[in-house]
Length: 203
Image (cartoon, rainbow, N blue to C red; front, side):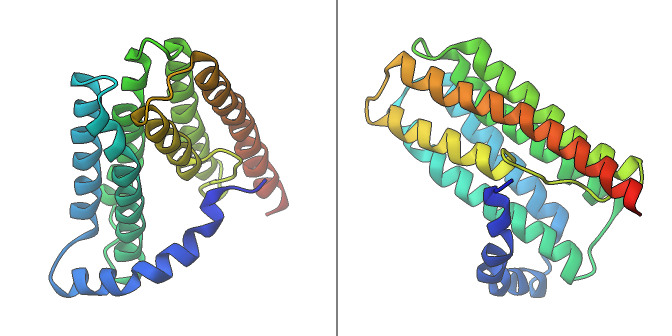
């Protein structure tokens, strides 16, 4: 099923000159991964401490875009500049789920948002990423199947942050948006598990 993740290769092409410059200056993939995590936690703290405030909400789409860029760069540094490591693999997977939790759980504090839906969405996001990793355990490739992967979650929460920053606080709107994310997250888990099993069986 279609997902924003499918645009990753084009995004990487745009970032490749930056990646080469960072590699030439001694920046490592793990440093970039940790920078993305630190940025996410910092923005998450702002959202948590100042729930519903304009500045953290308006910053969220920018932070999510920068995080996406850093996530692409750390992968390119690892693959294209011989920086792959076991530590990097651990940091990459843990960094993604920790960043998601830090950035998205604060939305559950907002009075016009259904908190359990947001918490459920974050939980399913973690399970979805775990499902993608479990694929490797059974001998398949790391699965990134959609329709609601990391980039799609970022797009949803970035949009919601923007809408909230400009005063759109209708509870029904966010029940629909986050509810759709919840349903799509469940479909994503199923698709990743099914694709991993099919890949293994066809190998």
